[in-house]
Image 1: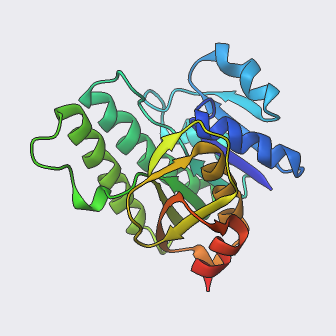
Image 2: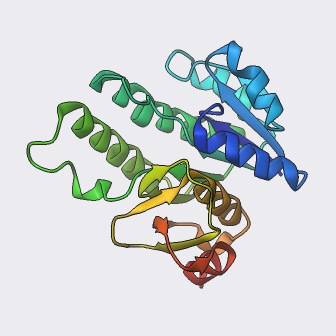
Length: 220
């Protein structure tokens, strides 16, 4: 499969690209900074330079054309303000959905965050609150596209750079905990292979169930 990944230089995306390349898929990493191209290539992916905050749907559609699926793994990242939570975490996700639709690419995996439907807790840091609201808005937008998009929304818990265990807890609702980015990437691969997860919103944390089994279970 040809898989286009928004946020192609991110920590989840680089791990995902390695996994896809290892099984002879063709990952494509969308990146804003040309200096990141070498890292994306080293992960086995094709780097494509495009700034999701400063592009048109037509330009992005050209990059998505011919893909079997898209994955939104972009984020404004730590240190960014509330404004960029809106332009990246919300608006870029919507733009990717628009481009995928125009390109005839139905499969869309959204990397979201656990608990965003609950909204930010009272008294939350304003930037964190903006992030939660941006993620919730992006998820809501995607859920309204069921006629044109075969979406799955994946909501990991607190992300770590620990080695993956290959075992998770994956369900519509789980207790908040942490999960290794390596395991998140592996779950995304499994979701791409499981059409029965289309139309599902799934929370993910570390657990005791092997990833393939966990994905099959929610698909059933």
